[in-house]
Length: 130
Image (cartoon, rainbow, N blue to C red; front, side, top):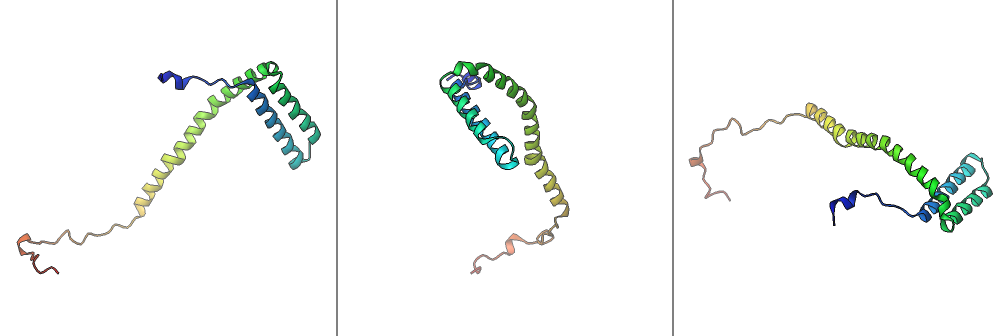
């Protein structure tokens, strides 16, 4: 396996795009119908069936729409990916580091009891330790 195989974009079938687009449009119309009481559920079913039929049988008609969606979401990903990476860095690396520094400032320092003790190794009797 060549290392460049991982960097190639996968081409999804137009049938899959048509079915996913129809499901997406149907969900949006259902949300508008149930939560905002706008739109028509019957109209949503007709759109859902139309895009499903287009995706399954007349999939070449969806090629320009798929091309447009790919370009739009490619541009959106160029903007959102660095922002998501920045937020993950802030929440995962920077914020715990700051919290650790604040915790270290207010943490009570324990005094070690054995620092000023002078014990001679020869005076230790290990025969009577139990």
